[in-house]
Length: 71
Image 1 (cartoon, helix red, strand yellow):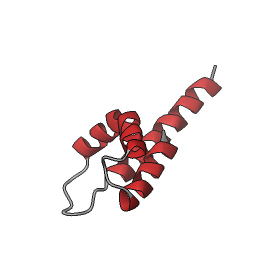
Image 2: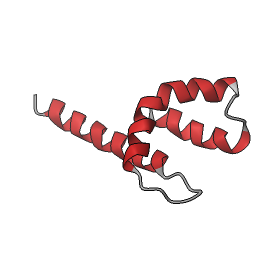
Image 3: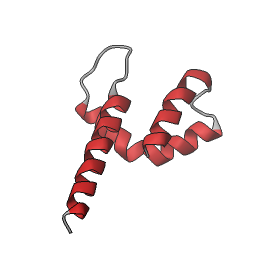
Image 4: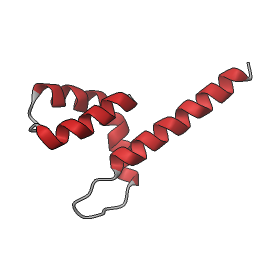
């Protein structure tokens, strides 16, 4: 998921949002990005929600690994 978000960020600089690859990545990352956009404050022209999404995914991954290492 983190890789898909990172590729989507890079593609947003070079391709239009109606490109097939961008649409595929958007459909994969939409649930996480929607949550991140609802949490992120408005900053004008900069969209910080991918950073929040990546940070949240890393926290979730660390918690998942910690929980399963206790089993």
